[in-house]
Length: 512
Image 1 (cartoon, rainbow, N blue to C red):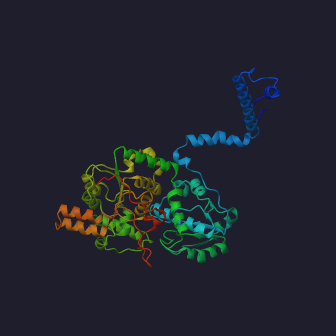
Image 2: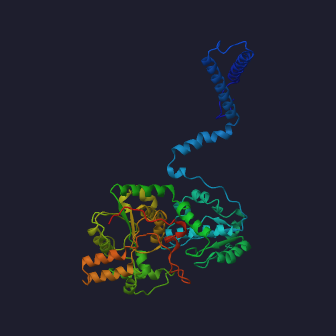
Image 3: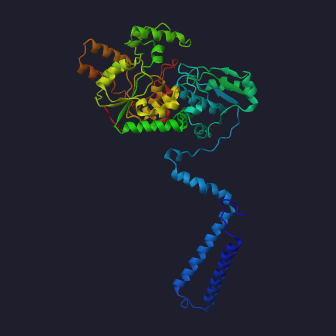
């Protein structure tokens, strides 16, 4: 019985074909021999007939040889014939680009387990840093664990947000990444005998080489339990900086479900024309954490204060909201945002996507913004309940949708420079310096107060706002370096200059 998947010619059929080929070869040889000895003249056999004989014999021999080769190597060729060609022709473009690099072989110095903390983009940056550190130390990285105990209480695992296989395979020429510790370490993990520590913030490569690597070699496994902002912004080897970018912009791809819905939202928004993604960071957790209560009622102020005291790791408890606002340390309110967008020249019909969670104060606080810009939509208005049902109580997955829309938008404007604002800004720079308006809140608050007290009329106010931001549109620039004060210098992921070619900003879609 013939082997499955291979040609099924019978023995008798093969013999018939082979006999015919041999007979044709003999006839051809005899004919050529007669021609050489002069017994047969080429004129006796028409030239066209001789040509046909030669082509027929050569073609038959070639086809038979190919058939024999395919039969003998059937198992080797079959996967390519049945799977590889259709994959190249039929799959989406994004999948066609997944040609993964060869695996890197290196002496493993141990295992690095990491737990990320914070929201989606805070964890995203930490993951990039930990991959770069694992590569630099020649250790095996355990798939990062995501924060489930923060304010958002999101139970999502790494694989619920990011494409695990793509993450692992796209980086296999840099570092080995496995889903869990090998079985021989399970008992140590179960009994809490694995060394756990937070690395020092904003550390350079020498800290990890001289302080962390010896611990990994000694204990075989090291668990870093706080990984946000643990790698310096500047003065690192170029290979580390470029690897951070590679992880962030190529290896950290969202799951197919998230990617599909994100692209669906962008497509729906584009049907109406160019759109602005507004990261209106005016959610309850942000206001409670920062102590910014401008425009809130007394009841809301008390609620935000109670929330701030409820979380012990929020160290600042007594906060002067007015002073913080004057210092530019508060997110703009929806009312202030409406004023600034109008002053920047955005027209009434501008399509605006709100990239944020539930706005504190809900419709009451959004009324001023909607009255000036009625074409405002949120993800809940673009997607059906069925689309969003799997994302219920999954704030990080919801944030992933906002991230995709924000990166793809024609203009991106964050009202507060938090982690999402910075990481999206950097991603848009990496993609060709897409227009990103970086609001100078400290100066804006002064202008807003002057306008409200009628020290500035509308024309003067609008001109001042536009002049203030003419060089704050996400165009090429160098990161600001502040020695001994890394927290105050420009964030690497907001401007990954080592990974961006020095090109001028391309002409983009201008909504203003």
